[in-house]
Length: 385
Ligand SMILES: *Cc1c(COP(=O)(O)O)cnc(C)c1O
Image (cartoon, rainbow, N blue to C red; front, side):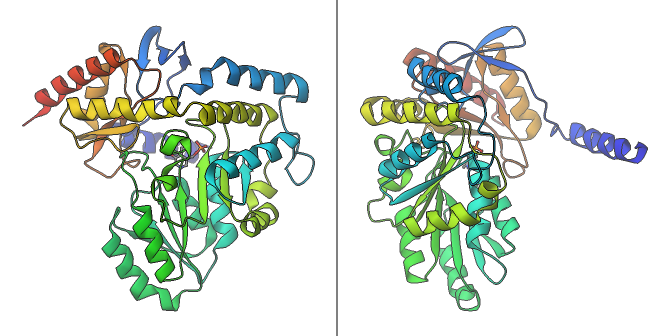
């Protein structure tokens, strides 16, 4: 179709001229935090594998063994023949870690949010979403058909203003936020948000993709706020757990409803047994090695201190550069020095806030962290007006 190709070509050209085109770069993980890209060996500060568990011998062996014993795929939706017993084991372990009655495993974190939110919310309801929340929360909200309004990032006054003005005319209300913000590394004030939710009868969903495994001895962001009541604790198996998949931890009633109504569970194939087995092995390591779970944040703190940035609250430290061109240039300079630090550009982050997003892992040595800090400091000096 000529018009179709012309449409795609024009779109790509427009993105290219604004430095917003993205390209896939084949990248192979090597040992530790190293990767191979373009024939070069780089140390990656762009993996979300915070504990390096995707490379851990026990996690790899668990995945391999499950694939050999049970097959490569799940064969059908969990409600048909795809509910391997490992998924039930995994749900028990996740609910224990999170301190909830039950859990539901999904094919990915993206599928969890796009399944959970529309199963609970619909037309006539209201969803209040932190302006910087992850794309899949927005996608789930859109799919639900509920009215969706952004509140200013981590702004309790703005959230309360919306609850005050909109609560009475809405059916159910959901407040949805990241626990750790994926591109900023800061935490949502879950204690205060949860108090507002109680006051206005709103349900709270916290997406803990970047908190599980690395905050509060691995239990995640909500555990840092003992007073917070977070009835919908969503997360991923794909980051600190080193595997693939997503989950929602919550009450028995909510989980039972999701298992019969969430469309991304009903109409999608179950998680492969190897992914479940890998996540189970990762949970064994996380629950038995609290000191390991603390390392990524400690390394991020050392980096933020070296650069006089606000103290890191999670393993993610943003270094905001500004324009997309400058962020790409900064990333290229780091690559020349042997560091893989991918530039993050709009629309992943707001216009004018393109950045280096630096993700710290237990596999980084202190010396590598300090050398990165030196190179980033030099880049910031050169960029200063
Ligand atoms: C990565 C991420 C997801 C999606 O999880 P996947 O398992 O990769 O699909 C959801 N929410 C947040 C905040 C994330 O960073």
